[in-house]
Length: 117
Image (cartoon, rainbow, N blue to C red; front, side, top):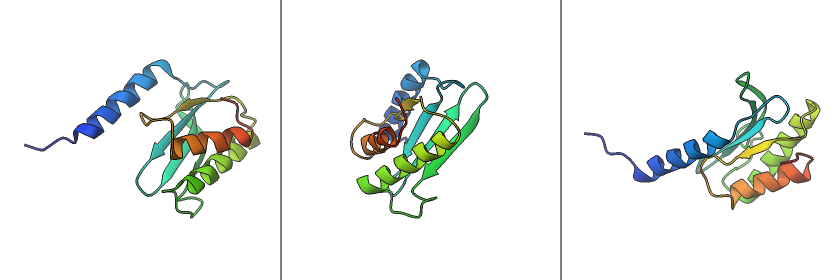
């Protein structure tokens, strides 16, 4: 029988609980954040059509994303791509993670670059 990582189960449960209340629309798309050990990924998603409108990651930017500086760079790049497509208002989906550290740094950088949460 395969073992289940209990922390992963709790993370997925928190993410589902958040997504129950949060949905991206054409007027106000959702910023979805995924954080791994080495990288951070973010995308602007319209859940009505199921399309990704803008995306950025530390892999795309070829920077180390396992630190706060990398998360800030990803947040700034995401906001610039979103503003090019005339997206200014978004809702933030932290993906079940706590709103601190790299996730908070990404959100703050996106706010400074022009996205409104």
